Image (cartoon, rainbow, N blue to C red):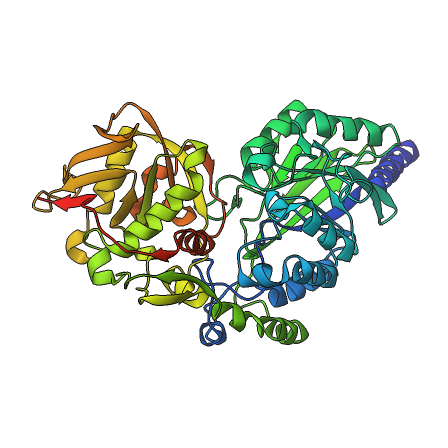
Amino acid sequence: MLNKFLCSAAALALSAGAAAADYTLTILHTNDFHARFEPISKYDSGCSAENNAEGKCFGGTARLITAVADARARSKNSILVSGGDQFQGTLFYTYYKGTVAAEMMNKLGYDAMTVGNHEFDDGPEVLRGFMDALNFPVLMSNADYSGEEMLAGKLTKSIVIERGGERLGLIGITPQDTDELASPGANVIFTDPVGAVQAEVDKMTGQGVNKIIVLSHSGYVVDQRVAAETTGVDVIVGGHSNTYLSNTSERAKGPYPTMVGSTAIVQAYAYGKFLGELNVTFNDAGEIITAEGEPIIMDAAVAEDGDTVTRIAELAGPLESIRQQVVAEAAGAIEGDRSICRVQECAMGNLVADAMLDRVKSQGISIAIANSGGVRSSIAAGKVTMGDVLAVLPFQNTLATFQVTGQTVIDALENGVSQVEEVKGRFPQVAGIKFTFDASIAPNEGRIQEVMVMEGGAWAAIDPAKTYGLVSNNYVRGGGDGYKMFRSAMNVYDFGPDLADVLAEYMAAKGPYSPYTDGRISQK
């Protein structure tokens, strides 16, 4: 009996010893914030003070301040990291560049971030100024930037930090095609992330670091490849693809975390609408025992930090002058009334579609489709201000490029004209193609009678089997306004420049812009 008791006691002691060696870490994370310091609407665009007071808004730095503080209070050990793309998306970036992002990230107390492609939008110099203002490191392993004086000696591939007596290795990666997506300059050479990550892992494991976290701005698909093709990576905190992972929502692209082998992958959508919270328990060997959590919605249930609200309001003051800035001139009134643009070709629809296509035609894109619901105003003849442009395109949508078959283009146009009787916003304004529809036919039963594509300077009938490059906005590409057929597009990039900026720059380049229609949409 005594021996039995001693054996049981020994087993309990061993169990207690093993438990004591376990280490639990809470990884708090955001990605693709895109200068959304103020609260946003459910459509990820600006949200008025009145709607915010009524509990209809989400996100904003003031809510994140509260949520991060609460999460830290719940955790014994925690870190806060970013999956990149703090830059670009609102007038805060247009006016302040990275200054406000640095101030707010410091206030939140981030431990590290990786470089997003948009951090290069204004070249290495602006990125360097941003990094100089931060109280934490910025990471990027899959690039040779030794020849870029603005980055060499400041940007780093990885870092080891300590939390709760344990060393944590953090590695950063950014899109390999950043040179095509932004303006990093000729002195930054991007490489495949797999080899870059493995090299940093090997270096850190050689130093005895056995808990390794990759901060990735390479997208959900690439993250899964990195997890599958490397060894020693425990967690990947993602970004770039604005992927919503969740265990409770039907809208999620996958579980939170998504496990690939023993690697846990997380991402928390975008724009500060969620705060990711992953709780990971490691054994003494640095192996994950459990990894669980869920992105926390930043809705009205999360109180806004008063000091932060005040500071952001102060920073927002000068932005009004931008709204009054003259950016172009219109030689005539540009018709954008919804009663016209949602049922037929309109001058504003042509302008928006033409501007979109012009911006990306050098990338092999030949067709533009814009939803008329994204066109919210006309522009009068004369001087055009940025406020006028933002009245037309207020949703902070970004350019999205992708590839689909000709049949998918036809299907998209069928969707676009399917509710023309109801004057719905899905009606398509286009460039690079022209089409004819017959509203007397039942919706989605062949209303599209003819589609012609501009090829080599001449119109040709669309080939249902051929692959075409398209540009739209991120809302439409993601299935908005019924364009679900674009969700499965190939070679997708949803996060180009803000559509309002594209339109302003296009109009400015045209001198006094002369509005027109040319018969690209006709009805039987």
